Length: 227
Image 1: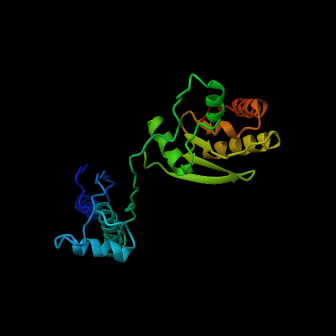
Image 2: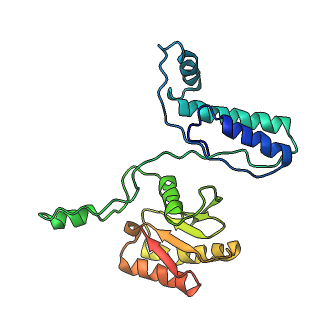
C-alpha cells in the first residue's frame, strides 16, 4: 500500500515483479487530486500533459495514465504473461443511501420525500461498490451483467451477490424476473449463501415485492434485501 502514490511508481514496480515470476501480487494506491499549475515552471510540463490527455490538471490523472502505459509496456515486454495488469479507481464520497432525517414539524412531507432511498445522480456502479463495502466483499471481485425481462441484473463474486437496481418492477414482471435470477444462480452455483438486492421504490406495490421474495425463497435464495 502506497499512501503517496505520486506518478504510480509502486504499482509499476508490482506489475513488473508479477510479470517476472507470474505471481499475483496486488497493490493499493492513494493519491489526492492535487492541482497542477501551468504557471509554475516545476508543474508546467505535467499540467500540459494533462491538457494533452484532455484530463483535469491534477496528480491523480498522471497516476492513472502512467499505470495504463506501464501495463501496455509490461505486456509488450512479457507476451507470455497472462496476469491481470488492470486497476480500478475509487473516489471517496458520501453514501449513496439517504439517511433518515425527518422534519418533525412536517412528517407527511418527509415520508413522501424518502420514498426513494437512494440519492439522485448516483450510478448503478456507485451503488454496487458501496454494497461490496457494506457486505465485506473484495472490491476486485468479478462482476457479470445479464439482462432479464429487460432489467439489468449484476452478479458479483460468482453469484455471492445478485443485484437488480431497475427503477420499475411491475406485478407482471415479477415471476419471469425471479425465475431468470434463479436460473442464473443455479448456473453460477456459488459455494456460499447468496444475497439478492433490489431497489425498494422499483416495486409496483407490496404484493409485487412479496411475491418476488417468495419465489426466490422457494429456490433457496432466502436473503433478499431492498435499498
